[in-house]
Length: 92
Image 1 (tube, rainbow, N blue to C red):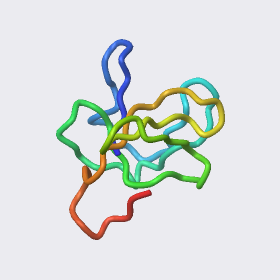
Image 2 (cartoon, rainbow, N blue to C red):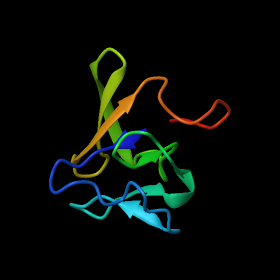
Image 3 (tube, one colour):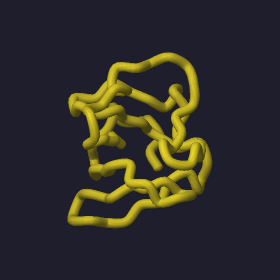
């Protein structure tokens, strides 16, 4: 899953320091740096959330889901079906 920010460019794509990624609006825990992986898109990408309710998502079009913060609904980007690291890595 890769996430995008349309305001001022993405600053976390190449950021791999240990830590927790939180929602920019409400500080809800979203992802651990342990689930982050290198991706060809210009946005950071993750394989799993911290909590089951970290994000919510709905099908926006075939093969693409809109992803939002599970607490406040802040838009986080998109999840694209069959887009991610090599097989065997957990996906949510």
